[in-house]
Length: 225
Image (cartoon, rainbow, N blue to C red; front, side):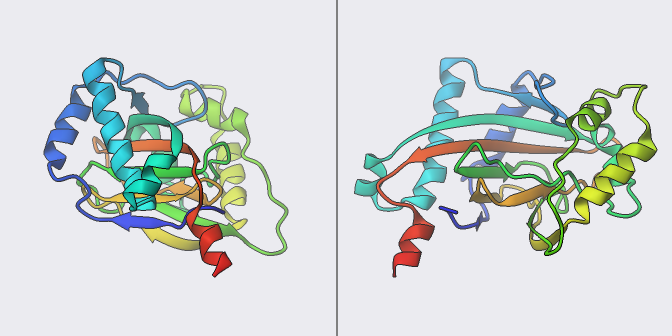
């Protein structure tokens, strides 16, 4: 683990501008087993805005400007809309209501999420694995069938696998989704979305997955002390 978990309230000075920008984008169903819709910046003005947001996020990790100038990074960034109907099964799950699949972003070093909806209880939970459990990977076929609304999906199978999966983990930290709040965590940190949505509601976020090359990393530096 290279990075600590972070929370910053009131991240944007003008959050309504960012939200209006997000609402102006065209959203599409992403490739892969992901809920909801995603929109990426494509024109020069939008790309410039996303780059500025990512610089702002990285300054939290590297506040010293001279150090900040020495790092290089790649970021995959998008706005995401998850609607009630996209995750209805999770909302109605009697054993673990509102909990999404638990996973790590192991291909990236740092994950940042900024909440842009007014729903305070649609945040993100961080987990660790319970002792005595052998990690059971998420079944990509079941996820794909659910997120594509396939008629071939057996919902009893989906709930059984989902709940058995969630039962492997214990909650470490819960971030509520206050409007204009940023959270960030190491990509290896197990986490899952919380979907406390009602019909016709949606969860709007900005998400960035960072790969960072830097002269030092906060957690290893802490451990050297």
